[in-house]
Length: 234
Image (cartoon, rainbow, N blue to C red):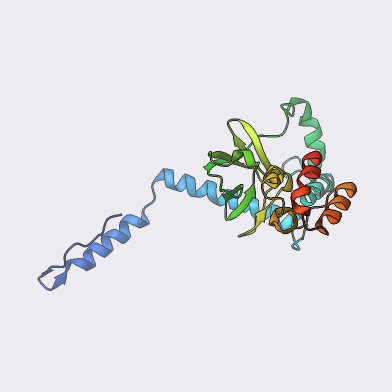
């Protein structure tokens, strides 16, 4: 809305700013039918969300991740449906009504492929920034743009239709999610990164490769020789 008052004039002792304010207040207080309908739908949605929160998440529950929540929720919903009467068909439970309607429902066609897609650049350190966090990608993707497909539980990063990274989605801030195998080709040029590089700090290698790495690390030219075992592991 543009400014309701551009100038203030006094005519017969009455300031027009007061009249303008009263007019603006009157305009804002009148809702069109469309706005009333939208407000009604919004209020109903909030009511439904409140009911779900009260029925299933009170008192507040804690889960380690979305997988644990999703494993718990179906059993909770089924138990509720079996224990409560249908709001309209009061002589039946919610579960009874659902089973009666099941043959008329559209068959389940699989998981809905819903994601939010954005274009991003790849840094020289094989990282892509999305939603205040960074995710590693294959070293071959450096230098060209990628498409980040953000699902509720994971991040897929594609380049020319090919997946160059897939990670569990992080909802923190300032976190960096690595997949060490993205950086294995880099070790051919910088083998010392295997000992000191951030992507490899918590990397659990196969037992045989780990023994070779420890042995080579004890020699003066171990970094140079460590290239070949890593290529074999890849």
